[in-house]
Amino acid sequence: ISKARPARKVIVTCAVTGSIHTPTMSPHLPITARQIADASVEAAQAGAAIIHLHARDPDSGYPSADPEHFRPFLEDIAGRCDAVLNISTGGSSLMPLETRLAPARAAQPEMCSLNMGSMNFGTFPLADRYSDWQHNWEPELLLKTRDAIFKNSFADIEEILEMGVATGARFEFECYDLGHVETLGYYYRKGLVKGPIYLQFVLGVLGGAGATVDNLVHLKNTADRLLGDDYRFSVLAAGKQQLPLATVGAVMGGNVRVGLEDSLSLPGGALAPSNAAQVAAMRRILEELGLEVATAGETREMLALKG
Ligand code: KMH
Ligand code: ZN
Image (cartoon, rainbow, N blue to C red; front, side, top):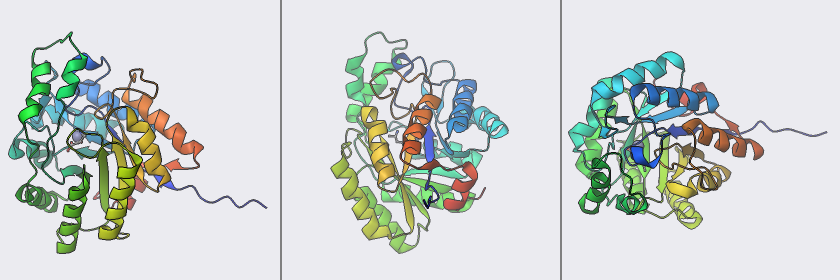
């Protein structure tokens, strides 16, 4: 008699646009509120339980943290699907903290990102790969990151944690390197971060840990030591390691993040025609491994979201 075990549920996050890639790099990058909403709903229908959101100026495509650029797509997505909405508090490395926090303060979502340390966040190498810019701000934005610091001081982290207490938002704790995991452990020990923690390992950002299996294993061992069983982890890798390392993360017992914020491609290198295409590819891999995607409802329960 074969005994089928219930499949483990894996939370798929889709980060649909971000603030790194620019309109020249892919015609499929969502820019307007309608495009961001459509991309999010399609990603949710393909299996994403969490949608991680940034906004853009609808005319230029420039990254925006104006709450008025978020409002239309937040309402539209919430009206068309029940995905968990996760608003970035990272914005971009060129935005000051109060600007970055404005959208989450205004919308009071179920989840926000929280970046666990200051770092160099280098997007300037991308400038070499393109020459046919649609907007002159595109190479400028990338090159400015040579001399920018993605500032997430202890005071900044505490301010964002306080915003979470005030609004009921829980966090996607983004850890790009070992020290960020140690900092998360510190706030957990202090009681300012409470379980169940959702830890996003971010690999492959220039200035942070590279996208390798060794790095992921060491980061996860460190989180196990500091957070015990009071956390779940997810893996995002920037660029071409997106699906391979997310798959390793899933095999290690974790969850996954995909989306055009982190990579514009599919395995093999072709441009992803949509965010949903990356979600669908991820889902096929998970299901071949005997795993199932978690619904938004299951995700709310697993992460103790306010709903
Ligand atoms: N762009 C990702 C590598 C945030 O929005 O807070 C990191 C990110 C930051 O998602
Ligand atoms: Zn983001």
